[in-house]
Picture 1 (cartoon, rainbow, N blue to C red):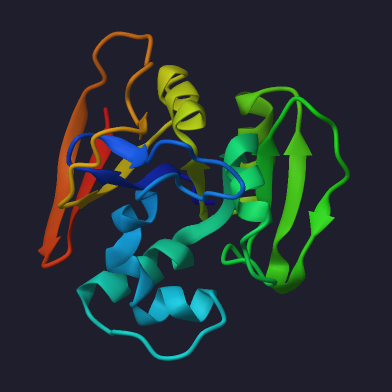
Picture 2: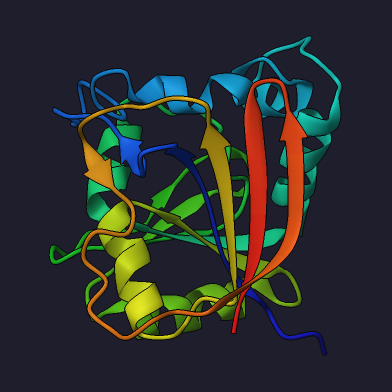
Length: 206
């Protein structure tokens, strides 16, 4: 049986931010943070996941569809969940099980379309174990936020890193790689795809 890969797939500004300042449930992605993902909002596969019609069909659209198709489960932090809980439609865009790392116990939250949010209180290894079991032969995506991504990288649990680099200097907010407390993490560049609105970078973690 194919083993699941653990993927970090995330948008980032040229100066390293994945969210703007003042992020919270009423200000998803922070001030100006949504501009990091502007390239994605108009492609067909993303609009389809938001229960909307139309959209562009181009290489960016193909990458978004491929990313959704390969994932069988997600892991995210409580902060990301809190921001999305008030804004995600029903069904949410995941359409697969989501495991939320938190310090507070909560019953699973079942949504339409195959998404159930399960709340995990005993650490990243337990969340990943549950996500891999749920994903089967598909991959597991570490959805964010930055603190959760940093924890997984520090623990050596990430197989692939995919960065969608927006041509934008955000200037302030939450950086992706600020607090990784370990030695150098060596990466192998496996793919670079450029488009007018974004540069897609793909690395294998060695």
